[in-house]
Structures are given as structure tokens and as C-alpha cells.
Image 1 (cartoon, rainbow, N blue to C red):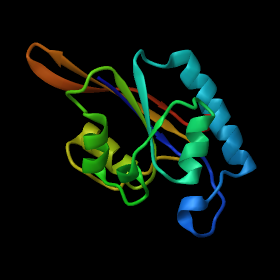
Image 2 (spheres, helix red, strand yellow):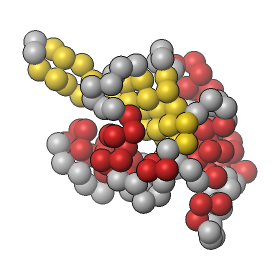
Image 3 (tube, rainbow, N blue to C red):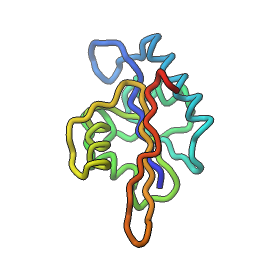
Length: 150
């Protein structure tokens, strides 16, 4: 299974939190990463998005075919992301467009074995693959792409 974690692009400050829009810079970040994703996407990619406006705008730069998952909102946690994606036993690939601190905590868990407060930059993408080698399940970090390098 492939698991892609995409933090929403830069959004305006303010409240209510769920209606914050992307800034002009954020729209540019989202479009840049969307082009990279289009060129490098895995097969059978399912896109799962937080219900916030900024995550939906980020995802829309890539596709209009996504599922809004309420548990992926700003208060979502690692268990919510894992449940939504089926990682690591699921088939195909899942792209989650979400928030800090959940995404960073999941990256820490996948790479170090325990949750920690790691920061994922706005608009950045982390790509993990799960595989089995000689009977051992392995998590492989395939890519970390900040939006400015996409």
C-alpha cells in the first residue's frame, strides 16, 4: 500500500477555522504540488480530504474526485488517519489532504515507531510505502516534497 500525506497549502488566518481559504501563495503551492502528483501518482489512488475549506481547495488543485472524511479535520489524530486509509493492510494507494499535528505525528510514528510532534510544512507531501520482505513488514519513505520543490 502507498500512503501519501499532503498538508494543506497556506491559508489565511482567522476564524471560524473550518472556513479559512487558501492565500494566493497557498493556491500556487497547491497547483505546483498537484502538477507533481499528476506526473508521479501511484495507481489506484483514493483521495481523502478533511472537511475544511483549505484542504478541499488544496485537493481541488489536483482532482475533483475526493472523499471528505470528517475525522480528518484539524482535531483528527493518528488513529483517525489510519482508520480512514486502512494503512498498512489496505490495497492501492491513499492520499490524505489534512492538518498538523496529526500528519506530523503519523510521519513520526511510521519512521521512528512512536508518535512525536514533527512538523510538516504547509503544502508539503510525504509518501510512504508498505512492503513485506522476507516475511518482515517494512515501511519505506519514498519521497518528501516541499511545495517549493514540486
